[in-house]
Amino acid sequence: MVLIHVTAVRFRLGLKKVRSHPRNWGFIPHGAAKENMDVTIRENIKPGQEVDIVLKKDQAAEKLTRGVVADILTNSPRHPHGIKVRLESGEVGRVKNIISRS
Image 1: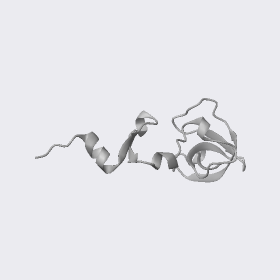
Image 2: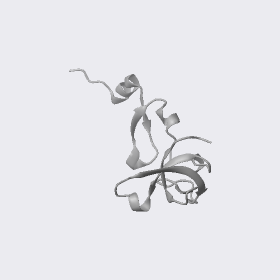
Image 3: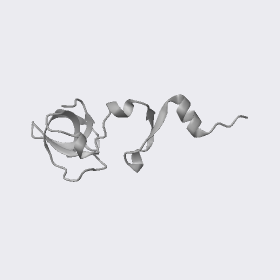
Image 4: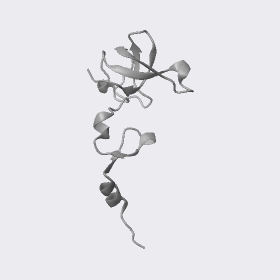
């Protein structure tokens, strides 16, 4: 039986540890973190960006709504459930995905 250290296995598989929030700790391939920006950090969200949000009424089903950010409503620099924004359509919800960076 051969024992291999977990770090060596992660290195060979090209995986790195991601730490955004303790509940979201996990492993992702190198380079993926650059493509998928952390939506829990306010400075990553800018007015004019296209994003997917979850509306309050759709939280249970996690239905996503796509739109363009008009206003950022979260005042704190981070929020574990996503930054709250108002879309140009007037809908308010928490950002789950950033589609484009403006």
